Length: 500
Image 1 (cartoon, rainbow, N blue to C red):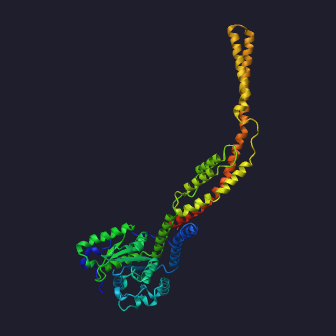
Image 2: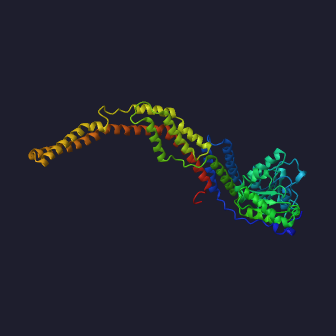
Image 3: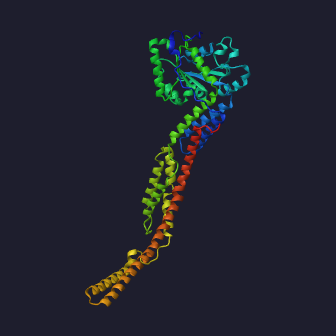
């Protein structure tokens, strides 16, 4: 099979420029992020959807299993739909007919592997192929092939897989493709000019893997069937479709595997990918990021704390429901409304999945809350039976002050008219003294009469705060603490450990 250069297809075969791949962290930071994802899954149990949590847990298990095996080898899976030419592409890269193409292998439901490494790596690579569950009869080593691509044309450490058709009518075929796609370190998606926008590949694979740009390449095959002047527009349209899937700056290459055109460029792209190394970690990081984003979207984005102003507002509303001086039972409907309002405020930035347990924690003890308020407020001592109003206490002193003012006025009249200078002066002085003394005494006694009521209001406030804390706020804070640990796990999953 020919493996020549670009031939008459010209620039259409050149790889679309892409940004350098982000350097993945070492195993330590990857483990750090996987631990964060595990913690988030643990906190989400009983709150988020079990299917989602099981899927994320499986992601952690896959990544952990892969990183236990050889990371000097890079598993590159070639995937595609029926008729896309992925097996032909696989054979062209290998330089040998290893994988039967198209309708000639209708019952093949397993992957085919080409191992491009020295024999001293055999044990590690065998363990990796066992983990991938590639059948013994479908494993090919470079050293065992009579004919293959030149030794330096593919990178050392490459494990190249040809997968069954992902759109096969046979369930076993597309299940196997989906299984291995989840395990491979890097992916080459082979599409053709007729079906590159097919919903099946985009909905099931490319869209969910949009964040895996660093480990993904898209190959547009059968480009020899497209007029040369149309090819650039076709490649641009493929890019547009991938960008619509959410893939940032997708890497696209045009080839004709049947004629061997563009295969050299594809080999070069694979060499660059494998030589960058740490591809297993790179895939693990992409999987962790995607899984963490799914969990974050499922839970919502809240602060995880109860603002002090909301607590004060709740206490104020419940105090109003209890009445100013505790005459009779609390207004239960008003208490319930205040608690539910707080729960709604707290759950506003959460999804229904996590908002529901927050609301449940706030409202689980509504009846008990009202009962405790009734019992503890009723147990408070009643104020002394003396006059409770400042106006009532000050009444006699107000009369005395009025009498003093009248006497002072009479004395002033006597002085002005000259009817009795000595008597007028004495009466004026006595009246002023009486009015001032009554005024001071009235204010002092009035303030003292207000103290029992003020003291009772303070004690009621402390009772209300204590009951709300134990029956409402503490259960809500416990639920929000779980949410906080969940968010901390996601933050850990999104951030490499400092200093490593």
